[in-house]
Image: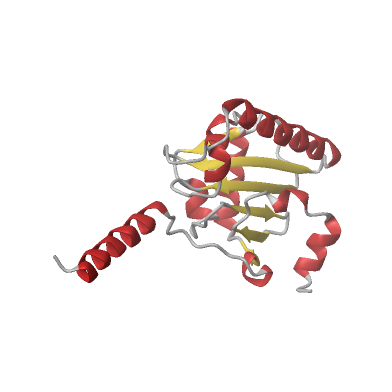
Length: 187
């Protein structure tokens, strides 16, 4: 057998294997692509608020922040290789940080959702605060663009929405009022 042909076949097989292991979800890296301001339609706004209220133990606040992770993404593959003990420590740290911010921002309702399915990071599956959007409501209203590492949305009372695409660390969760004003003013 021809050595060149054998090497080419191996290279092709390796390329197919690599492609099958990587996500086909887009990754937004430029700040101008990652953060987009839009407006939600009245009917979608009402549907969204009704959906979220059904998932909340308390009355919804004026501002809503939602983190959404998609099925079949590979964002946390390296972390998933860690021990269960390590993952639980990372998760505990995230929960403490989340609780601190919730207490500091009483005018905001925070939600973390994921798409239904079993192809998610262990971290997302272990977090009992991450709810599953079994109906696909959030994908249809806010998250039709599936991204690697999930996306977040800040929904303001005037129906303006700040979308943060490819948001692995839930950056939207940490946006201050000043940062939100700057984004809305297009600076």
